Length: 152
Image (cartoon, rainbow, N blue to C red):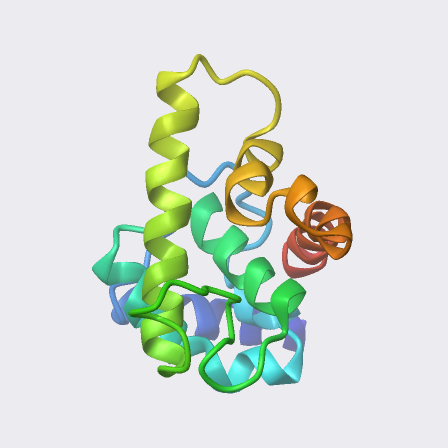
């Protein structure tokens, strides 16, 4: 009972902050913060602001959080974004670039006919397996974190 009340309180707080999971088809996870690792909880508000600026919401926001955990980059490379204007900046800039990448590639995937899973489409652009042997782990890692964040 206490967990339900806590969940409802967190949902109401999230609603008050204006965050929605528009288009998100997993209503059993009303507040993602319940399943986040401690590291991500402290960064959540910054990542959320960057996501909002880039219209990254719903499932794409979950992917953004999963990318943060999979990349686990140091300061200035939190999301693994290596563009010259994003590298060695800060969490907000890295999150913004990553959010824009997730959103733009979602549109590309839709335009290409939604072939295969979106996360695999994104994987081939965000962290192409052919570019480096370690990149072969990116897709499975992001999928793992998506499931963990969703509480599955």
